[in-house]
Image (tube, rainbow, N blue to C red; front, side):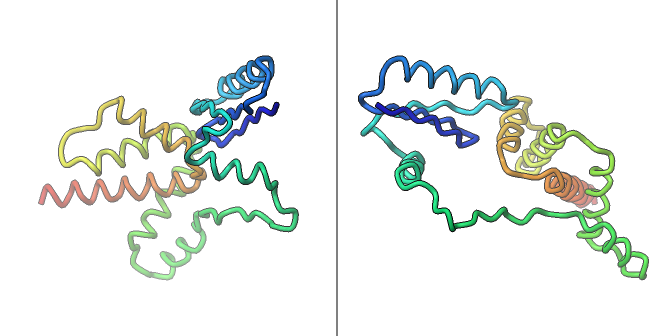
Length: 180
């Protein structure tokens, strides 16, 4: 009788009860496709029939059965904040710039330039794949796949700025070490 549509960001689950009508099933499929079409990065749509549940959906089913506790607060994870003022203060006081300060300045610059999130994700994908490879450049297909994974992650804009800056600096240092 029941049909559930659960949007878990990377996956849209469609759970069909054994006695659910064809009309309800079709409506749920159309709704899932409509949700997916509105996304920049499409999710996987997974159809699950009653008594054939598996994997991550088992945990979701448990929550659907029990519901959410009213008195349990969900806390948001701490997000990275680029502490440019503190870094500039330390540099002004005469301390030598360390790797963290270098990354902070570079991340702040990227943030100030307002580089689009998608562009940062692509750059991060390219840098990660470059570091993982001993030689050669990553293919366009590899970069696109990695970029899509990053876009599906929960990384904030500041975190992407930080990671891109960090990897750029590490790649440059690694490149300089190889030359010497």
